[in-house]
Length: 277
Image: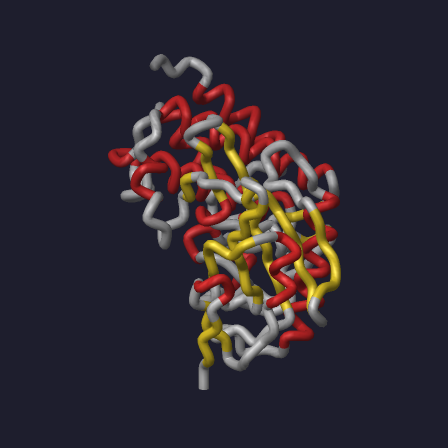
């Protein structure tokens, strides 16, 4: 039976009671995110005019079927991923460590638009000028080139990871928790993530998950960002060569895709460089 707690008057639903007084260390709770299926409980916190986003594992959240200890281990691992992949586009990690018998990671709060289908800001995000969306795509692709150079492959990337701050013009990425060191093979069959962004090998147990997989993911992002209504050329607002570039990236056959992200980036840049605004 679920219980509802009220840290600083904000409702927080859990499977069982948990002492949330540790949150005072970072300020007053103004937002609670308690419906994730990851086992993490997330908070918006404010202290002395500064706002933070805290992700905590250790409580029994309502939509997580596993044990809190497993969520703690996963969040500890994700903190190392954020350290390894530090980059201007990645939401920075301010602090991470054990607390209240669990584990927490702290980041700055942002009022950014989120591209994710399940977020109310998606429509505003996709209404950004074409030039701005091209810039967002470039920055996301450059981050993943950086991740590959650091020896990582993207796992569970989807449009909900992509943020845009209207007031600063910054592109930000979040939720890279599941990114994995290469070499990496599919351990489960149907992996974690949104089907719209997943390559065929992410459904095949034992298949290699590598840069060709990342090429597929970035190609899928191009279609979501520029032609969310469909992947036909008639839905596409850019050049035919850019469409062909994105289509090659999402080929079901691995060997027909670009071999790596750098190759995709060079082909994409050549396809869009002459677009006039």
